[in-house]
Length: 73
Image 1 (cartoon, rainbow, N blue to C red):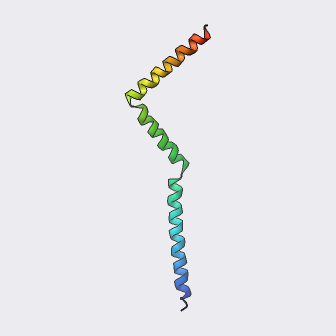
Image 2 (image 1 turned 60 degrees about the vertical axis):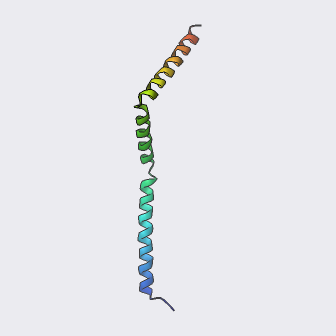
Image 3 (image 1 turned 120 degrees about the vertical axis):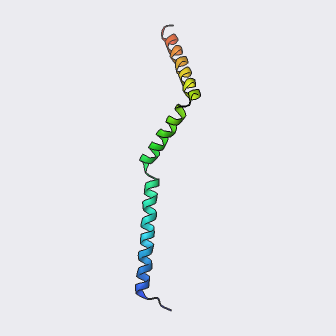
């Protein structure tokens, strides 16, 4: 049985709209700016933890002392 051409066109239009909606959703999810913002917020959250902050300060101080000693030897 052959389908009505109008019904076929409606099906095609619905498929196009669904595809366009899916592509819009994917473009929002895959936006590089969104990844950057997520990375920034994640890093800021981790650095706000005092344990992490003090460890990084300690490592920075040790590296500074090592560089200064190396320069003056």
